[in-house]
Image (cartoon, rainbow, N blue to C red):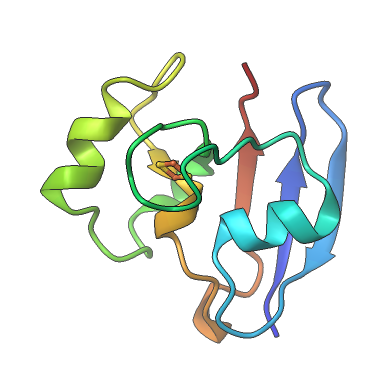
Length: 103
Ligand code: FES
C-alpha cells in the first residue's frame, strides 16, 4: 500500500497510507481531507483538484483530454494540477506528494 504525503490547505503536511488501488479522492474521503469531489469521480466538477509535487508529476499516467478540459475549470490550476478522482494510488507511487487546494 503506497504511503503519500498530503499538504492540506492550511499548510499542514500529513503522511497517509492509501488502500491498494484507491484514487486520491477515495483516500480523501477515507481521511476526511478538504477535497469535495462533488460529482463522485465522473469528471464533471473539478472540486477534487490537487497539485502534484513537480518531481512526481511526470511519473503519473498522462491525463486524458477530458481531464485536461475539466482542469481548466478548477480553482487556481497549476502546471502540475490533476483531478484527484483520476489518479490511482498504485504501489509505484509510494512517496507521492500532493497539495489539496481547497475552495
Ligand atoms: S470528483 Fe468531480 S471531477 Fe473528480
